[in-house]
Image 1 (spheres, rainbow, N blue to C red):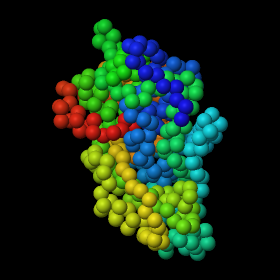
Image 2 (cartoon, one colour):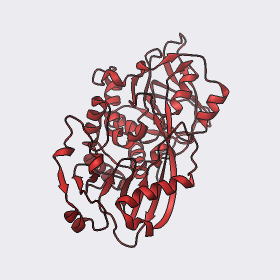
Image 3 (cartoon, rainbow, N blue to C red):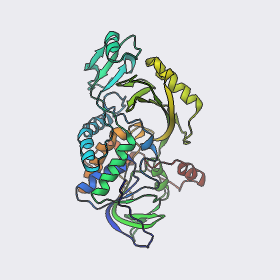
Image 4 (cartoon, rainbow, N blue to C red):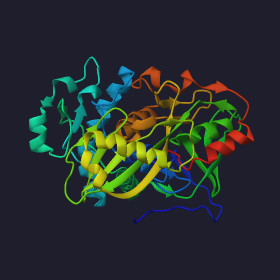
Length: 394
């Protein structure tokens, strides 16, 4: 990828309108959105894009099929999902990267249909076992399934890569391998003016933390605590000799996502408070067992690979979107849990508008970080070490 990379080895500092810390899909989407509106942006990433939670995701944009406990989150999901068709086209034109957007729709087992009061899933088409046998002959579903044509899916790493490359082409300055140690303050200590990194100081009018679980670590250096809940998820990929699956199966505790070249992604486990990125043998067995309920032939597929990621959850399962009020000039967009891909486009629109207009009136109050932010002592060495062990910013 042709990247416009910036390093500060000569000791020179740069000044920006906005520094976005974290080049996962949330941060990359925000940088891409801001730069198109004339904002001078620096995008910082301590590793490489998609090296954390963004690269480990399944890529389902399940606005209708997901069970959302909060209507405000459901509405954000619907809005964000509606942006992806145009976004995929724009990114392909700008970068030549096909993000793998597929629109065949989802199949939901009868027990997995959500109950949103305004959900359209229950109005979709029921596929009888006989119809399934014609369209998806390998699927086993004695009660049939609900077909929802409105749910797309994509390749997360390609989306992340395309967003970063497009942002760079619009003249975002991208700083890879750049870890933020602390925030910079004005002389009166009442305004955040930039960041201190392993590459040097970088200055800006506004700083946005799109750093997932590591947001907690950075705020701890300011003696603030914002709670997160790490949730480990494991996935596997199998390949089949022919097309065993043409639609995503979205069940309770199991999903199967058809990808190119007759590959199927199967996920995902959910292990709260686990921050290691190993894959347990028991997880592979669990996922294969769940998949075989609906796709018995998957047992004869070829195992290709397995991986895991750490979802950045929050105690109330709502992301933190908006200003960190005690620290003027500091914002966050983090804690998207298992829906980072789905919510990225909408989050970027909301936060960009807030930064440009310097208000958050269009962002529902339930997403405000203020609901959970507390003044505290800095995290203990043990706590910092635990968070640093998570190789993800998003």
